[in-house]
Image 1: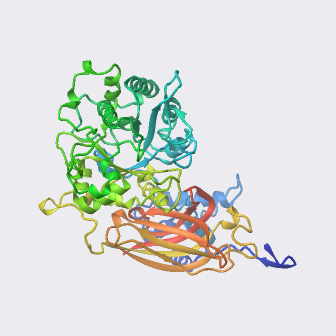
Image 2 (image 1 turned 45 degrees about the vertical axis):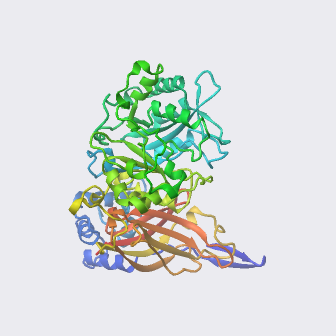
Image 3 (image 1 turned 135 degrees about the horizontal axis):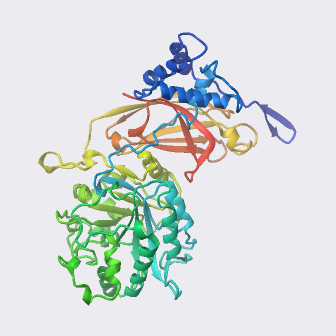
Amino acid sequence: MGTYRICMCFKRRYKVKETGPPQEVKEAFKKYTEGGKQMTVEQLTRFLVEFQGESGASTSDAGQIVEQLLQKRYPVGTKYTKKYTLTLDDLHRYLFSPDLNPPIGDQVYQDMTAPLSHYFTYTGHNSYLTGNQINSDCSVVPIVKALKRGVRVVELDMWPSDDTTHGVHVYHGWTLTTPVEIIECLKSIREHAFSASPYPVIITLEDHLTPDLQAKVAQLITQTFEDMLFYPQPERLKEFHSPEELKYRIIISTKPPKEYLKAKSEKGNKPHEENDSDEDAWAKAPSDLTTDQEVDTSGSDSSPDEDNDDCESRPPGVCTYKSLIAIHAGKPKGGLKEALKVELEKVRRLSLSEQALEKASSSHGTDVIRFTQRNILRVYPKGTRLNSSNYNPLIGWMHGAQMVAFNMQGYGKYLWLMHGMFRSNGGCGYVKKPDFLMKLGPDNSVFDPKAKLQVKKTLKVKVYMGDGWHSDFSQRHFDSFSPPDFYTRVGIAGVPADKVMKETRTKQDDWSPVWDEEFIFPLTVPELALLRVEVNEHDISRNDDFAGQNCLPVWELRPGIRAIPLFNRKGEKYNSVRLLMRFEFI
């Protein structure tokens, strides 16, 4: 019973009720038990296969579910062998448990033997920052958090320091951010790289070092990672290795040192304007994107024979540093059209700011997709996102960009979309790109995100009810005078034609709201669609209060009635808050 005080003298009491199963669950229980009050293991198996659409469910699977539910119902040590069956409440409890009945699977199921360029990769930007881009602390803590979440690409900005012991610091250049020693970052990566996934971790280095410090970094990297480090062959790759081949390996990606030194001398050591590792002229001057004028030639492909130059003429240690670079970054001479040129004899990584990608997708959209079929495209936030906010990742994904780099310490709905994408494929940090982004059509055509397409699949979503807020929030968190008034927003994030948000009615004064509302979403590109779920509390006198969110890959949704766990704004899972929903593909 919850008590709320009004005008300091009157009290209102509200009972926190436990909501029973939806009518559809009652009817299904009656059908599969043939009117009985207990559901056997065999009957549960039929329910899972026919009603829930789990074609692979076996009697053994159903038996394990019954076992887990009975263990929760009875005290430890109690024997319950006489009635190895479920009641209606047991079935409802199972359906409303995110641990027992999640909306998507938790196993890696995709083919992991294709080249790295065939996968979207969970990518961080300025991974060492704890907060904003101007004056927050640099630390190993956000790096560890990202790796534990499944992030596979970590970015480190390397700058000279006055410390004669290590000589290299990691921080955001030309800002007030406090530095952290690079050795601490490397040790943290070594310790936590594979805590969430066995697939390779790629370290992208923003290099502002002299040759002797580059040699120092090469020594630190080899000593820290030892056998975990992937050493590339002397000759440039014609095709990237696969995630399966690179399991439990650390991969280095940056510009080769020759190009960095040349660029530094040409620019006269001017401060970074965009503060990113592969600064591209197109990001600085979006209006020139369609031209083929001469741009920065500091990329890894600026001369045809630079990869085979004589190491004897190079500063000591630089060759060692360069030999560690498995994924070469940079860009060739010329404009964007030249930068997106696909070469059959070698592969590389190209970086574009979010602004440059938007311009490129508008003027050279099909060239971008062709480029990403063999090469790696990294997209990073524009330099004005000083508060560590993020951008719409779907623009990059629609054009095949593998590394859509995000400020993981940020916030907001775009970060939720990033979390949603990489819940896919068991949360391993690599998601195989849809076939239409990798294959050529008639006349060598490629996927066009702007094309008007037919509806390929229709998703029907039913929102039954929600619960758990009274356990995870204080009584007066949402409203000081009465229980909360919850409503749910449900929608699709994807290609422009599929993007939509809808919402339920508001349930007044109820900690355990029942909506029982259905929504239909026609999808033209279900392979790139993410289901957005957001619960808010209606407030008549101010902005509505946030009450939880989740984002799920549509292509992995399990049909049937499922329990949807909700997360806070930062993407941290609540202990108890969840929704009961049903998914059906038409």
